Image (cartoon, rainbow, N blue to C red; front, top):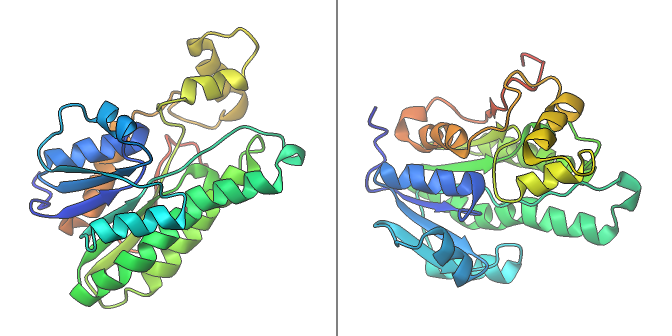
Length: 258
């Protein structure tokens, strides 16, 4: 299927690893010009050593207002904005400090707020564009082992829907995608951290779904490409009737049908 994305320009935050990297690769294959901001040139070069055609790497720490301003100065306009940047950690609720809360909120929520505040009004003015937030099933089913992460993912869902309300009668859409646990850089260490001491990577994955995500129908980590294909469709003109939605790609983990 031709997603009609050739000659479009997309910004993908957190695009040097995991889901973000899969999204970048999928969009490049569709003929999209993709801008990938990152905190360090070394990390960007490691992710894209061959400098594929259509890719632009920009050093900018989007966890800060200065980083957002640097990206905006370098790339004033874009057809597609994919707010994928995010961090997570397992931590008992009573041990989550104010600093922990502020850091995860600034990375997971404010990074998308700052960029959307710039690019979204320009999309409305052009009467075309796509804003996509990569949230999580944790935005609906808050994980007890990382409550602060779940709160930021709920915030993304609310932000996405609120912006969508401002698109009425335009060619702009705003949606969010809710992946389930997805194979990415650092996920093995995370799973081992909450597994039985000494568990192998395979055992840690099994224990995670057995003890922490038992409702999953997939019962395995999702591949980033399985998320990226949905994101690419949402980024395309073919998805014009999908707006203000929170789309699931969580392996059947959530049991509600609405």
